Amino acid sequence: MAQQTSFQTILDSLIDTQKDFPSRYLSYFSDIDPASLKLLLETWPRVKPTRKLVLLEKLLSLLDSDTLVSFDDLGRALLTDADPGVRARAIRLLAECDDPKLVPTFIKILKDDSELEPRLEAATLLGEFVMLGELEELPEKLHHDAEDILLAIESGDNPPSLRRRALESLGFSERPEVTTVIESAFNREDPEWAASALLAMGRSSDDRWEDEVVGMLLNEDPRVRLAAVEAAGELRLASARAILLKMFEDEDDDAVASAIIWSLSQVGGEDVRIYLLNLLDQAEDDELTAYLEEALENLEFTEGLEQFDLLALDSDDDLLDDDEE
Image (cartoon, rainbow, N blue to C red; front, side, top):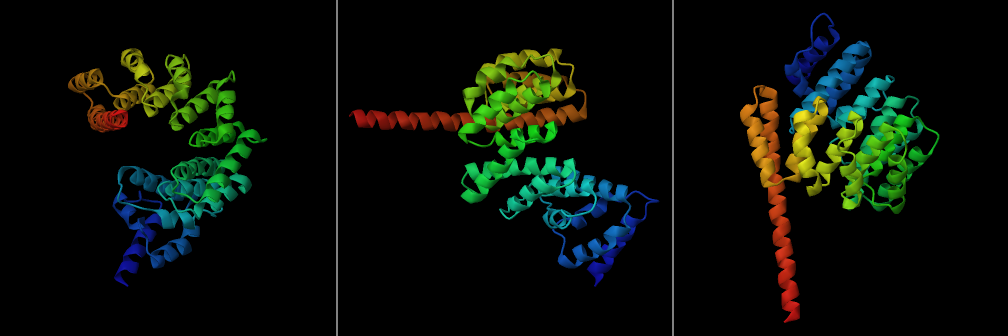
């Protein structure tokens, strides 16, 4: 009873719009027990719409920063909320959930929801399930169902933003026709489509796109430039290293500049370590310092992968030598 009373106090605070909702209460929504969830849903109609959205945004921020929290049960419960903003954020709360049962749910939202925002979020998370399918961590039928609906949305009579989101999620797919879809989008004379195509290229783990990605690193449109930088990092393109190293000093878009740092940490190379350490020495902003330290940690991970790849190659060479003997 004490726990329920405590949660009722939290809900009372949620209803009270005269005061900011205390951040210390956010963790109570993680792994919420059935009784508290029932109480929340009974109280939910009395919460102001803006207050609901503020709460959900705070929960999403906590989900990004704390790997120990989970709002899966709350997300599922709000998927059918009357407010499309709530529905969209409920889907995002499920970003870390790999339950196959969500695939049909997201497909239905993508096909039938009356508002664009939830459909966009459903398209995004279906991409995560396509990736799980490629890793053979999802039943084959659900994998193909997710690919089918994304292909249908991309090629159908849908809002351009939704078609581009479907394209981005299709980047995880190894279906042969996806290559044609990406090429077609990339060749459009539209920066937004080019950016989405580049994002899909980065997700493909296929270095067949190396020339396209590297060729767009210096594009005049920051949206295209950002997507190309991110794709170069995801694909670990060594051919992009020198360009990325030169780009940072002249880049006037903060998002692109941050992406350059992270992509360099993914591409790796001794000159990258020296460069990032120099940036860290010169950093005067605490936020930039923390970001550079995180990038250097990721660089260590990248270097570990490179060593593993070299060991694998040496092992293959030894096997070939044994066969020749």
